[in-house]
Length: 560
Image (cartoon, rainbow, N blue to C red; front, side, top):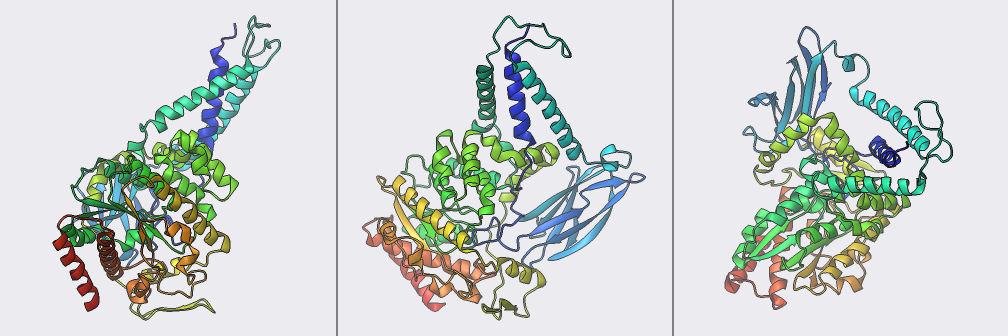
């Protein structure tokens, strides 16, 4: 007799097969780059690679070539760990390559650090050694075999799903079934129940938070999940807390540590949730996650400025926002994308959150041991010294907008020149307008959320860059947000506030401030906030100390 649950199971199997069989389109890892002012990583990011990562052994030994680059010309230190043993020095230098001829039947983790004490992890790669007789090394990699097996299995499951759900007499050929079914098959109901069961499975795994702890810690989704969770769990300081949002320009340009040194006498504590590649729609969900009551912060600093958002980065933005999404966000979140393909992906990611994690799941299945090891080491990685910014500038470098020719200062290394070239983006008009639309749509939504809250929303312009000759970046700030939006804020810093920073001496590429610019930007932002919050009858702790702090900041700025 035809069992009623079997068509339902068949439908679920088809859904799972289609879900996992879809080829990932974009791997979300900070070392990859989609160029732009809101790039997914800071240009010139450190990298370490191994060729090959899976070494075929001959007589128990093999070799691989390790290549590394710190990205900014600073000295790097490469350490290697054999099967979870003690890390030992392997090589050093700002960039280079070296052969490791002693690879055995183990796993080796090569890590690039910014210091010889292994406090600042820059990049990591894992190398595996396997016997020459291993079939996956002689033919296809097991991932390719698994993909073809999945396709064949999906075809088989689809066939049986159609067969079991068909109406009329059931065939007597394989598989053997009665010639007639005494019960109605209820095809539509079985289809509905199968899809509902699949939704429940996806919700139990991905919407419940069960999968979040094993997200790749260096993926966009993993990083956003980690920093928002850490901020949610952070104990209240008892001071007036100021949250600073932003993308890579704020991540490079703002120092929460320095801001706290300057603002603590006035009773202020600064917290940064700036994340490379994050745009205004991601900021909205980050704020909702860390401040559900809209009462936690005294002020929220929201940056705005000229930039661009490439449409081909839609999967990246969906992936990084996925840990923050809920079922009810499907229309709200999807509305923030320009193309229908992006809207469809965003809509599906809210209903089937696992669809945004496809690449992460594939990576977990391919390298489960390395994933677990990286998760265990992530706390150690984030306990390093405070990041102080890039320690070089572009003084002596010039850009000719007419010819696109760059004349580099002799002091720049090849890695530093390469980082600058990668940042020389000529965005299309469509990408620039998309960036403006995101800011115009989502910054007001953040403001609406705090419309009945005592939290002050502060808009701050971003310095445009060292070379305003770049197409589109010479536009004024008045073209970014309409005056009606700016007037709704508690206060907004004038567009000219950071004009003094738009010089080569404060940048390490065409968009991002260096260490000196980072200090200047932070000093000025804190100074402006202290002065304006106090003038708006906002009473921080220790008013006399606040006055001293402001005067001290102004004296420092004047001296420099």
